[in-house]
Length: 152
Ligand SMILES: [Fe+2]
Ligand SMILES: [Fe+2]
Image (cartoon, rainbow, N blue to C red; front, side, top):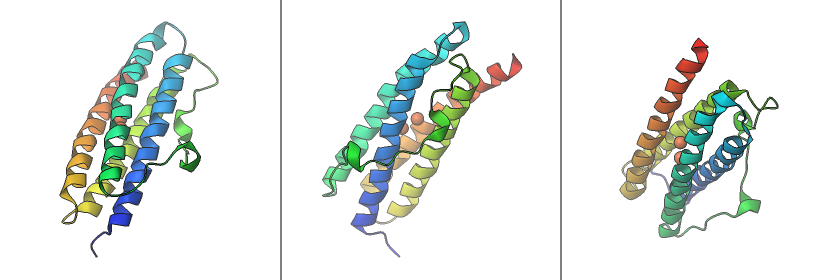
C-alpha cells in the first residue's frame, strides 16, 4: 500500500528528532571528553555537529514543503542511551562506539524513509538517499577510529 503524506511527515519528524538528539550528544561529548587521546575525537565530533544540524534543517524544510509542522523541544522524544557522556571523561572508546550506534540508527531510519517514499515521493526519497550516503561516510570515519583504538 502506498504511503500517505501523513506517514511520510511522521517518518521525517522522527528523522528530525534523531538528528537534533545527535547534535545535542555530539555537542556534549565534544566538550566533555578530556585527555590527550580525546582531542582528535573531540574535533571530529565538533565538525560533525554542523553536518547533523544541516541534516535537521534539510529535513525540517522538507516537512514544511509537505505541509507539516516542525516539532519544538517539548514535542521531541529522545532515547539515545549509547551517546550519553561516559562517567570516565577519558573513555574515548565508549564515545566512539556510541557514535557508531547513532550512525547505524540514522542509516536504518533513512533506509526506512527510502522504502516508504518509493514510487510516492521522489523528492523526499532523493533527500533520504543523500543523507544516507553522508551517514555511511560518518560510520566509515568512526569505524576507522575504532580500529585504531582497539589496538592500544
Ligand atoms: Fe545526520
Ligand atoms: Fe551522521
